[in-house]
Image (cartoon, rainbow, N blue to C red; front, side, top):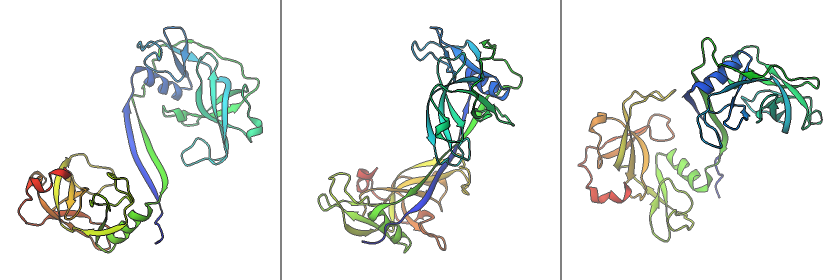
Length: 314
């Protein structure tokens, strides 16, 4: 069996959201070293605050200031911190019920080791030196056995220059192993060939191959070269430019049924005005020098395919 490929892969995108009055007050308060919760209809104080009562679903807006000290309710030791976590050395993840709150807040506890952490220990917030109106304004918690609750009580939630939105960088780092079938598919692409696998039962050819037929559930092993030409089965026009993608909008992304394949793959269409792309358009791959896969597909100049020839792949 040929060696299966493995490679590190990162999926990352910025997630932007606006804040309502409760979350805005909470994050702005952190910037000002103030922790706010919200009082529910049954009198409980929730930290972090939410905008709707989790029991009654009533809208709640009564903000309450709680203390920067609290009690650890449960914890877990993180012996190997990852990129972007609160501390760059081993620490404990803790749930802390702040004085004046009825729920616990998840954050990091700076401790020399797991033996220094226990449920019930008293802690206080260590504020970040530079605060911007984010949960990271709490740098972490630190042990403080003498910690006593500070002032708690109603709060207007009013601050100058309130935070109205946040941008969170969602990121996933992992090692991708495509498996036997897709390893062969990727290696064939490096030779400018597109190879699928045929199901021994239904005889359909799947591209990219999965190693098993998604319809019959049986293993596939017979390799079949398809294409290189194909037919546009459906498409969309992209009008929003993606970060770090050097393609001018608008452009077209399409599902393409390669000749001989029984599953459409997706790719970008170029070499034709975006408003002239259509279902049934015949296309062929365009490779760049040193490219490991087609850069895009372009029209072949052939007559459009009849709908009946690709309707099962739409």
